[in-house]
Length: 136
View 1 (tube, rainbow, N blue to C red):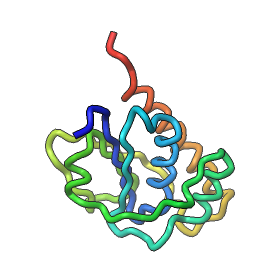
View 2: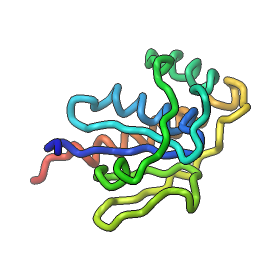
View 3: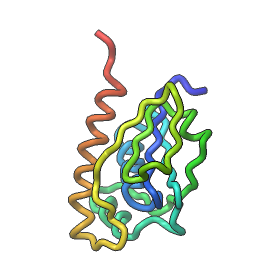
View 4: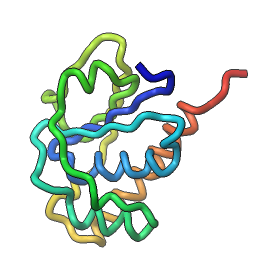
């Protein structure tokens, strides 16, 4: 078990929102926070508009692949961020759960994905600040 906090981002297809969130968290705090992402019904590939939107900010998620959500991944994470997976996400005692309400970028073009990306970026920045804050 790692001594750094772990965050699991979950959305249905693990192709858009959760991949962008993981990309931002890796970019902002990879050395300080373990980053995982998964989906309850993973797609075959990451959403190309999400890849393009992240590339605009210099973050490459093109090498990522959607992964299936497992009970172990949830149980071994300190914080689980859900993004529209509803009741399909397993819940375990002792794990912190948060639901980020974000539009699903599936099938959307780059112009529709940018505002979703920007909301995710703001959420992730706040999460990094919270998880890396030093006690006073």
